[in-house]
Amino acid sequence: MPVKHKPQRSCVVCRLKTDKRDLIRLVIADGSLMIDESGKMNGRGAYLCQNKECWMKAAAHMQLSRALRRKLSDGDRDYLRQMTPS
Image (cartoon, rainbow, N blue to C red; front, side, top):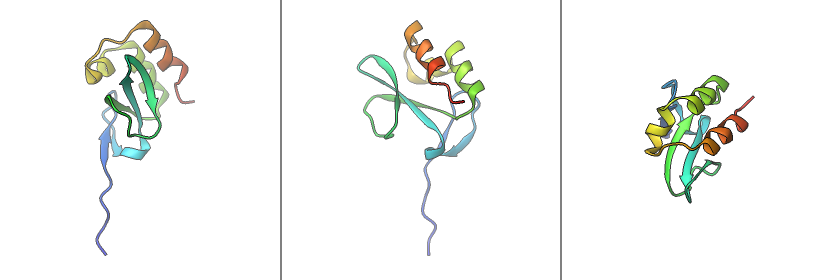
């Protein structure tokens, strides 16, 4: 039996490359940042791992902004801090 392909993605902060389902996709939809739980939402997306430090760095630095090709607003940064995995 052939092995089924598992899509790989990278965290935009730490560059950890892993299965797509192990990462959390963030997407810009209707002008605001949100978590894409289905992984299929329209809009520009970027992936973050479930490491709390990556989420805090994403809120503070430019990696996520660069990946999404959009400057993050203060509201977007607050959203990231609130949604940080524990």
